Amino acid sequence: MYQVGIDIGSSAAKAAVMKEGEIVKTLFRPTGFSSIQTAEEIYRQLEGEGISRENARYVATGYGRVSVPYADDTVTEITCHGKGAWWLFREDGTVIDIGGQDTKGIQLKRGRVMKFMMNDKCSAGTGKFLEVMTSRLGVTQDELSALARQGNPVTISSMCTVFAESEVISLIGKGTPREDIAYGVTESVITKVVQLIAQVPASQYFLTGGLCEDAYIRERLELALGAPVKTMPMARYAGAVGAAILAEEEQ
Image 1 (cartoon, rainbow, N blue to C red):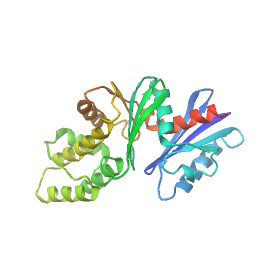
Image 2: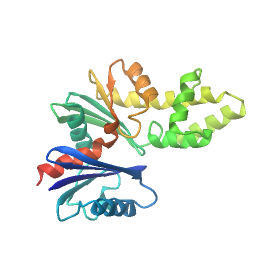
Image 3: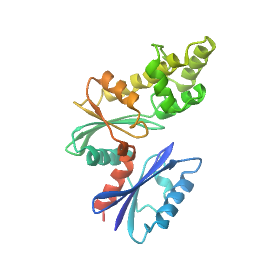
């Protein structure tokens, strides 16, 4: 039997397939307009590779977990991200997940969630904030981080993405170098994330989600938190991995 975890986020959908305790396949695609359609596309792709309802158990998580009609069970993001991060890193610490819709801090001890915090009242400090800002600046996330490395301090203080975008437009109008604006945008996110994570402190942190391979974000978080921030490419799939582990436990 296969165990399949499907994490339908507001920006991206991820799937992790496990068999005999090992990850054998991962899938990644933009969520798009319809979470239901994206979930169906994932199922069809897996079915085409011999993984179907007949030989697999499915657990869904994430913002769009209710949009996975073939899921045998649905589980909260906190539980799945905690389980997935523990499986990947096998150490105590706090998970930092900067998602499209919210940012999560999950404190782990021996694989158990001890405490968690989530910022979902404003998109500032989330992936959506970065998405809006990269669009405004006409760059990708990788390009934004590369520019920020070269930038000088500029403060973007608004807690609201709409007002922060107005600040960026004003800076562009003043002729502020794009590198400096990129620096300000990135530091704005780092500041808000650290304020949240300070409520679930640890001696080390694990960066999961879509920004896990952004070296500049990791470095700035590490400096601001004053502690190691560990990550790996597979950390993008932490939620899906956790869901797959739960699928195995429930079989």
